Length: 100
Image 1 (cartoon, rainbow, N blue to C red):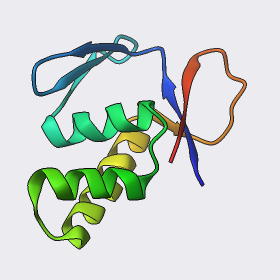
Image 2: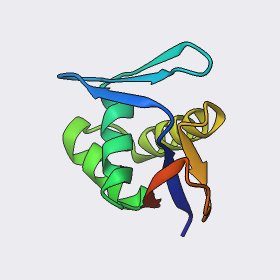
Image 3: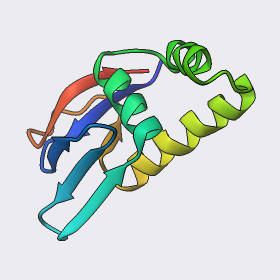
């Protein structure tokens, strides 16, 4: 089970069907669409990827392989953007231990 942390240096704002994330150090804004927002919010709740996959399957009724690929892509994008950080860290700039 991989653990994730959310970078608290960023500013998060929930919108109706999206999440806006602002990186003030690099003056970058990320806009997560509905699916990415669901995935991030479920990770915050400690859901594992398989549970997120089942939830999205029941919501959208598309192939599980497609959902699994989307989850993997979104998590990788969040890691690349440093919104999520993999593993245990004692870095005080991180918070919200997430499990997946």
